[in-house]
Image (cartoon, rainbow, N blue to C red; front, top):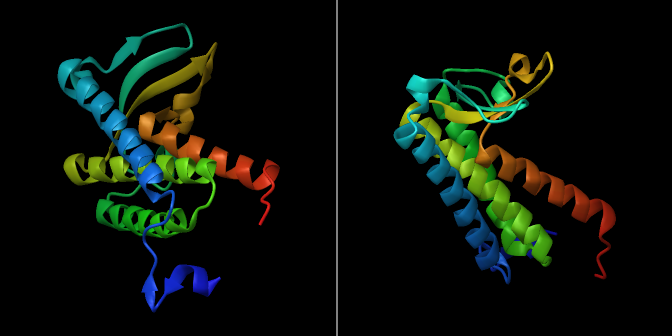
Amino acid sequence: MADQIWEDGVTRLWGPLTTLGLAIAALSFGFDQSVKYWLLNIVDMPTRQHIAVTPFFDVAMAWNHGVSYGLLTTHTQGLLIGISLLICALLWIWLARSQLVLNAMALGMIIGGALSNALDRVVHGAVADFFYFHFEGLNFALLNFVFNPADVAIVAGVGLLLYESTFLRRET
């Protein structure tokens, strides 16, 4: 395995599907940042706080100071930014070694979402979350279940990695 990562003593940072993965990362990043810009600056969610869209879905402003869905809340954003960047660097190395299109796409989704949320932490000191689902008295906000498109990209990417590792057989 070490020979797959190291070539002539240098970490291999580009592979056959790296461009695809990074393009997916750029799309995930760009889409998330565009939605956040629109909701923060055009719709002005910080002053509106709540928009009912359907009986079970609202657009609501929430600032996430923790990791996924508000878990492990901290005001030490630098630590979370550093962890995000380290994880993205490791995922890039994995992407460079990837031989499957689905794998590269999934890694790109995770990298793009993580970098977008890290940028929020740098710019705003927290991650801007907006999408809030609830159902007849079951209030997911109690669990901080307010999320953004970057979170969707990360969860979808992890889901694709699980699908790929569980159901798709590799011929090599």
